[in-house]
Image (tube, rainbow, N blue to C red):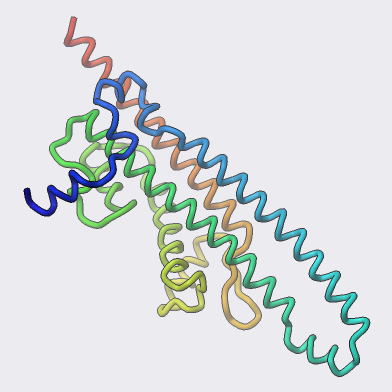
Length: 247
């Protein structure tokens, strides 16, 4: 057995691969998109927990800073103010938590489009799968779903929006969540113009704001909804075609 065949045989089956073609079709696509909407709901709940926590902690830290400053000597107080410790914390820690959300959203989307690709390859009996396409992850699934499966939804605009978020995720992951560490600052500035919630800091860096997380969640919701409707349409059409040719 060739190495590529051995790898394919030994890897863990996805949830979609465990069902046969008839099950996928008769479910109307439910077995393909699975718990996508619930996962997005959970991610939105996580976002709300993060933002509530940040609001609470930031308020506590500001009050603690005010209380502590009152008991410091003028010289030490001046040193603390000059260090801008509290301000730096507020720039770093919230961005770190928001980075974790962006990363989770994009990881979910990548798995989802791979599952949909796997399911539609069975439903449409394609001669190739998404694994045969060039590239990897979401861009590879896009090629398969649009060119091989001929999906008309999500729209090109929706795919492009997801791709922009993917670019941001990659920058964050490959640079330890620090956008100012990206070698090509121009790439960050281009995304900053297209995505809400990427802001400058006073020291010339960047920080992620809550608007970016909301945008990522809303964009993902629209994308998954469009993909779900298209999968439904294909399964319904395929089932109707099969019944017609049986009778």
